Length: 92
Image (cartoon, rainbow, N blue to C red):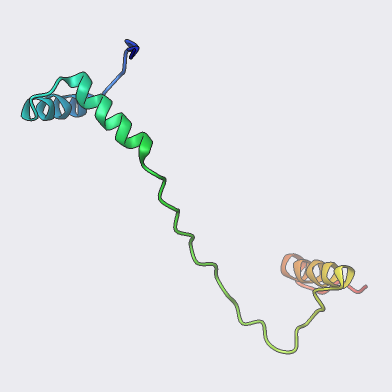
């Protein structure tokens, strides 16, 4: 047994006109057409989103700071920030 549910949808007028036109062209009811389109939409697998490329930078060699040493890295980043904000390197 198939149960049917009545519901109210708010559909923009241009889209509703297109749906009615297609239903007439296919000799189908509006409800049947909308049901078919909903079923197709629910069965579609979402397309994987294309990831944006990440920027890359030339850092130079040898590195200015050892990334494995967190304290040194934070000190370096803070000094760089201070220089950018205040114009002078802070003495540690």
